[in-house]
Image: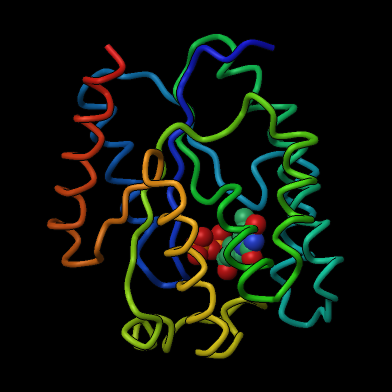
Amino acid sequence: MKKKGIIVSFEGIDGCGKSTQVKLFCEYLDRKGTEYVLLNEPGGTKVGEKIRKILLDSRNTIGSLSELFLYLASRSQLIEECIAPYVGKGGIVVIDRYIDSTMAYQGYGRGVSLDLIRYIHNAFVDVSLPDITFLIDAPARNLLTVLKNKKKDRIEKESLEFQERVREGYLRIAQAEKQRIRIIERRTITLTYEEIIKEWEKFNNGCK
Ligand code: TYD
């Protein structure tokens, strides 16, 4: 299928405030009268939501490769059911976590081969690559207080060292893909939001 629409993804380590920014970004699109579909990973489809439960249940012990395959299975389903058809019609997809999460968490965090992840992605992501990605960046130790009072899922229970590796991974991915990925330093909710909108408007004007 030939791509016509735009995929906007949001990335960052646990507790960075990404989901708040996704919500604010969507409210901005609503005010502009821009149509979009909002998705999240893992999940977003009936099967994907079942996979999400397995992945995030902190009682489950899951090996690194099984974990990788589950995230990819959820993504493959989401692309097939939602992303590809919508983008094919020219729509905007806003997605809370996408392919870079797998590179950062399973690749840099768990140590799974980055080449293997790229190879599998190449087989099914195809025209559904993100066009612009907002990476909300902060040192993992600064986010400990955010996560402290939360009932943690299986991934959030990982060590500070794990989250630091994920962050470093994200920064390396961004370094290699400067065209697509905008690193947004996590500041107050408003300042972070303003930076995202500034970058989005530059990108969007360039698309017109
Ligand atoms: P979620 O509750 O959606 O977290 P957040 O609000 O931080 O986005 O949980 C998703 C978790 O799954 C999160 O800790 C990151 C992790 N994850 C991976 O490890 N690999 C992936 O490919 C994806 C999409 C998420």
